[in-house]
Image (spheres, rainbow, N blue to C red):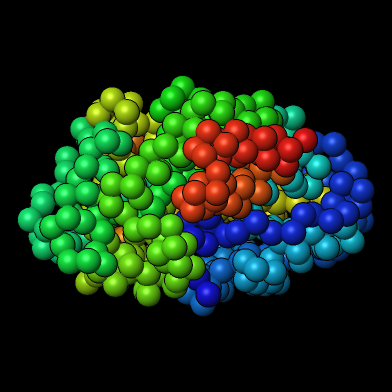
Length: 438
């Protein structure tokens, strides 16, 4: 079941890449392609394409492959769709067995796991054109000693979603998202909780949300990772949990029991989905799904900042997912040519739309906008609006960092239930993350 928590996490922690280090490709870097008997396809006109998704994504992918036949009729592409829950286990097994697909859909959490073990081709060295990508959107696929390990299939940024109906019920105006602070968010939410019936709240409990935590530490001059290790200190993490505790103590959001139960609900059954919460957080590619539950009425807001200035919010473009090519593909030129078609042509962009995120290629983005519905247009408009306000791209999640969502959730929930202090929670997330990264 696709829950609010799993949506925010872009997938919960998956089992480790068993055997990848010992049995994966022997290359030490991304490489520049070229043959190899332990990956890719033997036939120079044959490629394998693997991705995870849903029925809409599967249909779009099948359609874009059909369209590519008009461009490269001599290339045969075998399709290997999957679901998130089993995708990474299968990919790790394929890697260990020397059966890595030629082209794979990749997630940021596991990009370093594969790239730094030599499984992924350096797309820049292989000649992929990224000249029309928006500034800051290519770097999110670069790895040290590898190069451009993957190119984003679509861009995300973190948002606060506001339900105008709850604001109206409370007699509260939707805030100016270019000037509000973290304190403003809680105070506004508290007003809404107090002015609406019991069971309706101003905001969700956001203290276990990885994307918002990362924004918090970035605004403190730190980041989630630095040089392959945790990039924040215990004091900053403690301040985060103190802010999260205020959400609960002030009544701005639900208590611990209600919050934990809510996080396990499907999106349409969650408190926000059923109109019982005024504000929640989401990645911008989730705007459409949320908006559909509210008849297209949601307002997309920037998250708050410490200084009350959007220019200092330290938002960043996150790849909703990537396209990567096997370093051992037998057909590097054909594989890169297909990826080029996916990310650089309006034809493919119109088929794929923004289901994988907003295109990083500005020419493609411009071409598809006229055909988008109102909800999809909100996501595009939001990314365009924050472009001049973005901070530096964060370091890609290092090996082991995929566990952080669970680490943050466990510590946050223990703190909210009163089992540990905010200081203990702050120290614990730092210690457990460093342990996972070691």
